[in-house]
Length: 545
Image 1 (cartoon, rainbow, N blue to C red):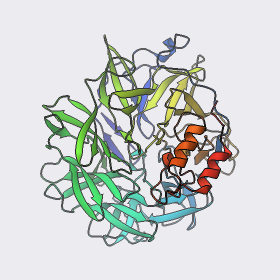
Image 2: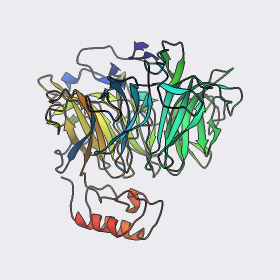
Image 3: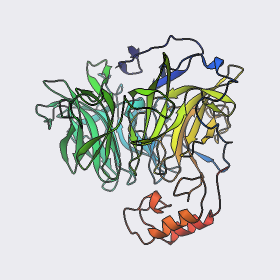
Image 4: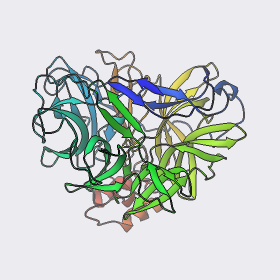
């Protein structure tokens, strides 16, 4: 199937087993593009029927506080005004509460860039010019200097190019270059040294032989490791590559042996084409956690299963889930999308499910091998509505925190046929908590509108909502919001702050580096000290409704 996007054409293999209908469930696959879901039957038929997917959600918990971090028509650092297209360009959030995102800038020659915002300050970390990534229009050469020579020209818009930001403030991004030794590359902004280095560029030697004819997006952890997509000359295969300390190595390549037998035949099957004649592999992007575990999708020939999701630990690939396994909602998995992985090795992913007898469903699942739970599925009843829209899982937008909470977008349909975009926290105990919903008031003076469907969640329980902002004064048409206040101190993820959480913190008290939220680092400075203990004690005894 081919769909026109803002800057190019996306080519994706999609199997549609159910006929389209106006009120059928649907899946958002990229930006605001949707396809009919495989789920059986119109959503309207399910309203008022017995619940079909787990416990109904509890009420919206008190204490969610929202702050606007960046918005349309905001003054840009170098002049002009911000044009973020928040619903198409998802930001990423780190555990320091910083967000990174791509935006255009109106009214100036340096008209696009990658930005970081912390709620007080908006900073441009790199700027370019011209018609955008892949446009063939490099502009007038006034972009920032590139590490491959020349200057940065176009940056890439859209869901798949969201720039990851780690806790140090380093940001990973793809950009076109004007006048350099390579026309395009994957680059890393390093916050400590305030410089930009090259991770991989078109034309670089490939670790599997030949050269890289295309470089795609990647994921990044807090330990200086990056996993990304690279297309190889000769074979044309898209492989998964890894960068560590300036060296690019193969993580897994088409033709490599799969665990249990067979070989990997496809690792990434999506590409975007651009008007300049170039292509970029865009998915499935692998994920990586701070332990160095890598999660990825693979299709296998001659193996124990045809397709599934894998995790690499210590250089060893392991099947995490495959298409022959039973699911928590019945039936067996049919197909999978890009898997998130948290710091404890838990995985979250969107999958289609074959329920048997010509019946299908789709949803988000979280867990570890042999211990999967449903987080969200079509026909779940939430806040008086029924789930009629979901988004596929994509890296690097990690929406799963180290306590197993998943931040997920959904469209809910109500008995009067109204549909409302809704942001949910799907908790480990099965609760589906409404964070905010289309029509709620926003902090800029208007309301929450249609949302970007790929949020991220950090380990301090801050999350992102990017949306249209109807009725907001000052020409603010869309914005990136950060919500906070969702029970910090609940280290074990059971929706309260009690003796178990205190014991978990005290067991790690005195840790001076490398501490995580799960260890008791509540203030994000990688240690567990008196400040963290005081923060936990300040909410001791509190529980979510």
